[in-house]
Length: 263
Ligand SMILES: C[S@@+](CC[C@H](N)C(=O)[O-])C[C@H]1O[C@@H](n2cnc3c(N)ncnc32)[C@H](O)[C@@H]1O
Image 1: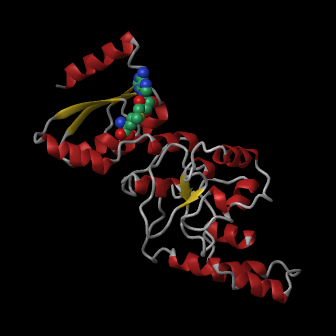
Image 2: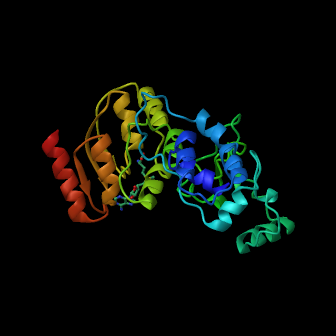
């Protein structure tokens, strides 16, 4: 199973995988048959990009530890930690079971797997961790034993696919999980019933700003204390950013001066 999943994750087609297998003469005819008829290929074909499509940025699934992968493989769509067999050793799971038995809450989203026919849950900054919410890909039958990709999380937050996130994986999780969904911001901006310019304090990657831009507002300047968040902001929203802690007087003075200069 793992070989097929890895091949699919790296974008190999069934034909390419078949050719690759030729390089491994020790693979028996029976093993070869099992690998080539694995159900994962069917799902991969359903997910296949049309010939004209371009590569989707940030569509990478966070890596799972071996133990997390074993757990994830045992959870059906709509399921959660209760579906994980006790034969899989996990201190965290033991803790969850104990607090559940003590009546301290069901923790029903922990190790949750999404369903294709139901809404997703709130995207937090922890979406790469299967044990911290309901973020496992819904396609169990197709062998998608992984948490949602950065792009899938961004889509659920209503970021368009051409909004590309910069920075480390940890930074990108924060940018997506902490964002105001652009579509929500857009609706808020429309309901203000006016148009203007805005200073974007605590800007993050720019979810709020993007929604306001869609509604016709014009950004003047963004401030955040995380350089990689502002790199994303500059590439997708507006080039004028100022990095620094807004509680620092010198930073605040610079922001005020820059806004005065631009208005
Ligand atoms: C909830 S997030 C903002 C989300 C963003 N408005 C969006 O829609 O994508 C809060 C942001 O405030 C920033 N922040 C927190 N304290 C700050 C400070 N003292 N100075 C500057 N930025 C700060 C964090 O780095 C974080 O990016």
